[in-house]
Structure formats: structure tokens, C-alpha cells
Length: 181
Image 1 (cartoon, rainbow, N blue to C red):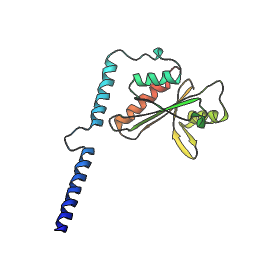
Image 2 (cartoon, rainbow, N blue to C red):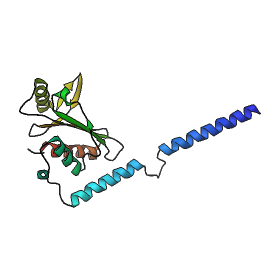
Image 3 (cartoon, rainbow, N blue to C red):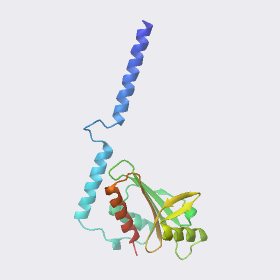
Image 4 (tube, rainbow, N blue to C red):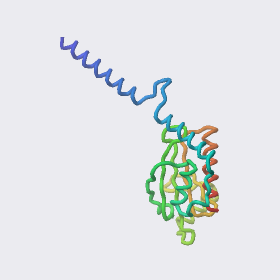
């Protein structure tokens, strides 16, 4: 009998494990909460573009103004994490994570430079990004985009590839580059 009880307990534990893991996995035909968020963020983006257009002139020429503008365009969401911007010679930096047709597939880092007081690190990073669209830091190559004003640098990463995601990346970069020319 003890073997039967052990087998019953083992079967109950396996059943519990399977039911718990099913809660975390999308079953066929079910929509995940991240899928509905993606749909709603895409819907809100198209709603905002069909409503009043976002005017860059309504935003301050600061890192905070850039972030507000990017939020209004639907490119970033949520609250930022502060970044140690001194590693790339910038004054300030923030990082946003979010989703575009996926779950946490977007990371956006925004940095602000004091263009009147660039140190050697800042000059090297900016020159490298101007030349190749990349910079090397601690042996790692990072793709980056510099705004036309030279005041802002963005590291935009989408872990999902494909035509739609590539088009979205190009759109975000174009809006970023043109912020406060």
C-alpha cells in the first residue's frame, strides 16, 4: 500500500506541476495578456495617429522632452531606468523596455550629451557612431543612432526580426534623428 500511496502522491504532484505550467503557457486558440497588450498598443498607436498628430514643437529639447515625445509617438512606454551615461561620455541616460507585437522585445536607451562640453570619451563615441553607426565599449560592439543635432544618442534593440519589425525600427530611428534638428 505504501507504494500505491507514493504513486498517487507522485501523480498528484505531476498533475499540479502540469496545471501550474499551463497557466504560464498560451494554449492554442487562447490570447495571452501580452498578445492583447500588443494588440491594444498597436490599436492605440493607430488611434493616436488618426487623432491629432504629435507635434515635436510641443516638447522641450531635453532628454525628458525627447522621452515624452517618443512616448506620445508610441515608441516607448512605462517608466525609465536610469543609466550610467558617463561610460559613453553623456550627461544623462535612461532605458525603457517594452513590447511591439511580442513580449518585452524592445529596449530603448536614450542619452543626452552636453555638446558644448564633450570629453574625449564622448567625442570618440560620437565620431564612431557618425562613421559606422556603432561604438565599442568594453569589447562589445553596440549599434547606435545619433540625432541630427548631435545632442542625443539612441540604442534601439528589437529582438524580433522580420519585415514589419525592420520597418518599425526604421520609423523609430527616423523620428529620433529628426528630434529638434
